[in-house]
Amino acid sequence: MSKESDLFGKTFDQQLQVAGDEIADSDISPNRRVPGEVVFEPVLNGVRVTARDSEHRVLWGFIGSKDMINQIHCPVAVYETLQELLGEELDKHGLPKREAGDPMQAAQRAVDALQETLDNLKASIQVKKVSDATLERAKAIARIASDADRMICLEASSFKGIKGKTEPEN
Image (tube, rainbow, N blue to C red; front, side):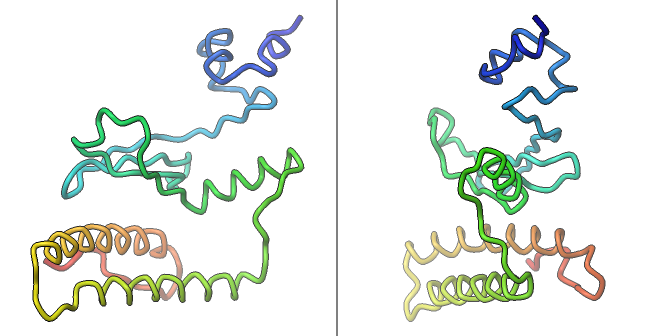
């Protein structure tokens, strides 16, 4: 019996126990391994943890803080690269996948949704009287918006003709 047939149908942890170091070089059906890295980056109130593929594209990420160290579950952002990989996996298994449409319309919808989010964020800090809650909200929005701007600028910097700020204003 081959080693691969010994591994079929086992969880990744079980496959790792059987295959040892050799598992890094193989995809064992039905499991698929995506080479990459986990990156820890300091941010205002914690550490951003992102998983990236071998081309450093973000797959998923979350902000780790002292408050969440003992928690099992936390909010995780799932990014386009992971969504595409997941779509491929679902398609392999005949499961529903994300709809593919006109890329120009999809881009316009995404930019419109982003603009709506920005408008909502601006409205939430444009208040007549600043309270402690408003200040806390403003701190969170500053962090979130700065992170999003850096991510967008980094990802879009390879497109000819697109310029964005490389450093946030203080």
